[in-house]
Length: 294
Image 1 (tube, rainbow, N blue to C red):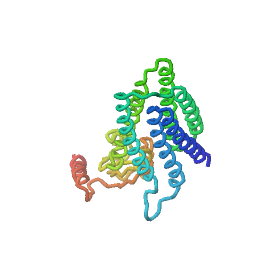
Image 2 (cartoon, helix red, strand yellow):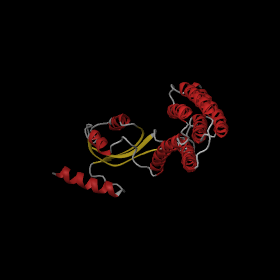
Image 3 (tube, helix red, strand yellow):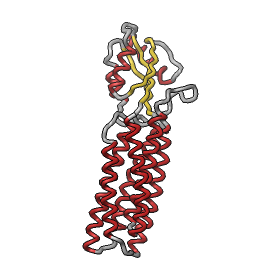
Image 4 (tube, helix red, strand yellow):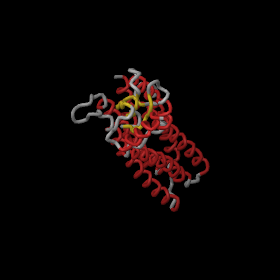
């Protein structure tokens, strides 16, 4: 598959260069390059997981994984996120030490590595710019961030080359590390929300109820539960009280939910006055009966 091939190319480019730049950062004495190498190693792991999941996610649900294998991507993202958080903290610690005790830096070598960094990450971004895979789109975003990061390092290296202000290097590394840390923490929050089965971002329960109530034959909507397996595949269960005069209610409800980004829905239809084992349903059905009697 083209998508898998593109992700694999990005993985090889990113992993090879992250090792190369770690060695280069050590040679040039640049903590900014070392900090970005740690970021790139995290990205390479993320891309590797994406490549693995691109194949794994194609497996159909079975008796052990009835929802399929898509949540493997969340576990992979969690591992990568923790690596980026720990790496960012270590980079900032070392950078602060460099501010207190500046060291000589090989500016010419730093400029060379920065130029190579821009080129390699641009190529990786180019290979992952198109495709029908959400994994590939995520990888492409990582690569574009890396192009920006290396551009910053390049500008800083050129400034240091002509000014010899050594603390620019650790300051740049702290800025890059903070940028990575903030994004990693933001990603960690999304992962925690997924495991807690929080209502996915962009989906309004009130709006869903309002739209479904407009469907002919629907008298009430309640007991709505919406969650996501991986941040992209959204699921829902819903109870619909109907008057029995519209045989297409299920189809129309599913069509409405698809417009809200929910592709997998379990619907329970109830007649007016029918009792349900769920407390919320009992309360709502009592309300419907009272309303119906009026």
